[in-house]
Image (cartoon, rainbow, N blue to C red):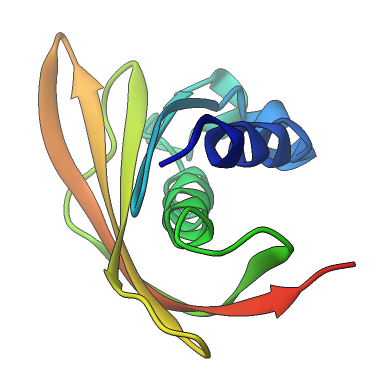
Length: 140
């Protein structure tokens, strides 16, 4: 993956106010693979003290979307057309990691997946699996 393509993805991520609100960071960008970290902040918890599923979904969707974007030529973006989440375990810990990847690239549809892990005392627990479809769009 070219440094210019990585820069394009990092600039796009920096423009997402939702990711800024959640305190999320873009930790790794490779062709077809992206990793996003997000702290489990007091405002991101549900009533039992675990990370809310909305945080899990937001970073999982973004990781999958940026993985898809990493496969797109310059002048293209992607939008999520559908995304399914399976919540596997409570999101207990200090922060979450979403690892997005492209399952099948295509000109009209890109099939993606994200695995989300909660980090608690250095131990990873697989808390969610997201699968979805991205659609490439041309931008001016």
